[in-house]
Image (tube, rainbow, N blue to C red):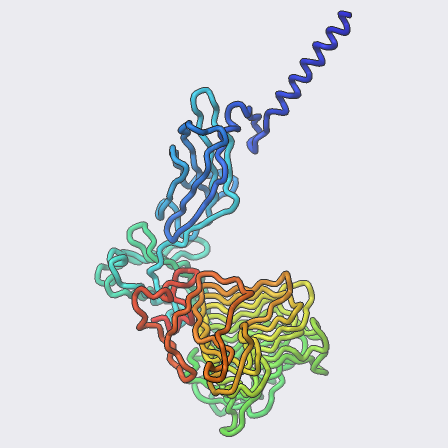
Length: 565
């Protein structure tokens, strides 16, 4: 009996120990926490909401905190492990607002929170924010245009109003945290502009305008790299001959003047750069029929040049650039990238780019296609051709980007990638800070036709889309600007302005186009009065309170920056 009783007592003791241990919790710091004290008071639902120059952090009291006024410690760190603390605050409320300069604009932060000790109850465990956060800061700095940047300087412009009267300095910070500080006088602050010189070529800078330590505007620039030309041509030189003689990677400089290529030219198995010495497309022109990029390794970079498809005075090129196999158009080929910067392209009768010659989907591969700071107009301007401006169905690529550019008077639609592609990579198509007017015909989708099965990430952002279809009359476009049906695909239309989007002229039975099916956020429908004949898309006369002036995702003016002011 004694043995049995002792056994029962031992069994009871073990059972009590198990219950105690089961009721305790091991925290992320490794401590055993007693729920009878701290766990019931652990704050919950830590939320972080950012405005331009502030972060508002709120939370809920613990489940058993009713009627008890706890104090809380909030830590902010740029380190997710919180080895260093950038900001800490003790409060007895369920929220706190932190304002620049307590937080640095543009930095990524993490937050954690605990309930402090109260009486005999110990502090709670830490609760961590689900995601990092950053503040973008106030934005009175106007969008920085490409023309404002040289190899060693940048011209900055800002809104002149009471909010910028106290500006007193500009900082430029490189990626390795070297800071250049330039003081602003009261007169300069009132002028709304400052040119900073002495910058390093080929360097990325984060630019800020400040009042003391308070950020009043933020931007990012990259100064131009110095160019060393493999060969420099003058008007009258044979450009086709120079291209044929060039080696892979050569940079051919064109002095101001007009160059002519009346025959279709095949650039085979190499990537070449064509660049105007002046970097000014208004004084350097190529009258061009067509260029075919053929075979593995073919690619092209073009900068600072006007491309005029009226190559003979009476004859016009059909397509600017095409991708083709070396021995047969559809042969398997891996191309190098296509980059077009600071150009003017016009008057092609069919389209700008054709990458659909592959014998099947995925046979032709292109790493990336990029158009930046370029004006494109009068492409299939009668709308009689059904080919999209950029026909890239069957082409396997990573990124297709058009940014800081203006496109107008375009027939059919913009992007056709309606053939199902390989699962990987998922192609990304982006229009960013673009101005697009007077576009569409042949019942096409104005923005993109991704077919019924193509997986794509499509982003139309910080841009202006106006007036569909082409204004010549008798034309129509689809009732939505897109076809994106793959369930994994993404279609976004954000921080943009649209107006005049109709399926046909209203007088011809047209009706308003809908954006249903695209994710929409922070958009406007401000009618800017543009018509099919508009060539000047300036926004400089918008009223000070116009939502378009600070409507971009970075708080800047939407559309091609060349028209911002």
